Image 1 (cartoon, protein in one colour):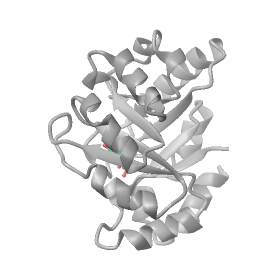
Image 2 (tube, helix red, strand yellow):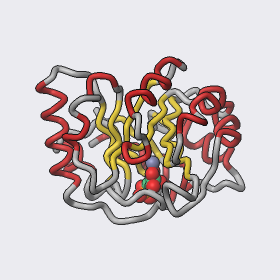
Image 3 (cartoon, protein in one colour):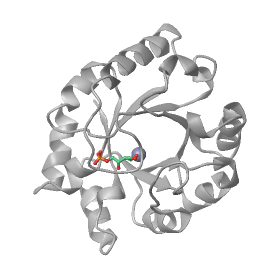
Image 4 (cartoon, protein in one colour):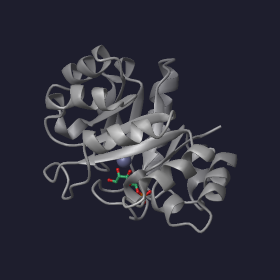
Length: 215
Ligand code: DX5
Ligand code: ZN
């Protein structure tokens, strides 16, 4: 059964409590929290302060996706804010192994995100050290973009790498996930579906989450 991780980037920040209440009542498994610095990606979202508030509003897993440069400077702040999973971008980390060790030593699960142009085989020598791979299925920075179809090939390749090594690494798909393409994404081998617009712009959010969960 898929793990459903709604992205709060598409939530109503004037009434976050209502959206947290909805997610808590729903079958959503994780909160996906998108942190953007205006340098790694051409957009700025929110940081540890907002996540600290969200942490108080839920007991669900807080899955923090850092789209920032120099993530080592902030890993501790995100731990203090309440992150359970901290994901850094492959393209932002010159010393990725060191970043992963730092995240784990702080007591969080460690994830690595890949931009659409970054091949999954670059993870060969780090795969055994991480808990999650976030395959970006859009160029990071904004919600509401269209799914890049080549992602399906990357999912199949990565799933084979994980299974061949007998590892327990989750594949998360982030960007453009809809009720129309989610089944195909899961069939390709993904474990976690991030969904921003599909959940928050739908008429019945709880029902949309239930539909994703039922796939
Ligand atoms: C994009 C973010 C995503 C985004 C997904 O940079 O990492 O998590 O919120 O939004 P949708 O599901 O609307 O594509
Ligand atoms: Zn994300």
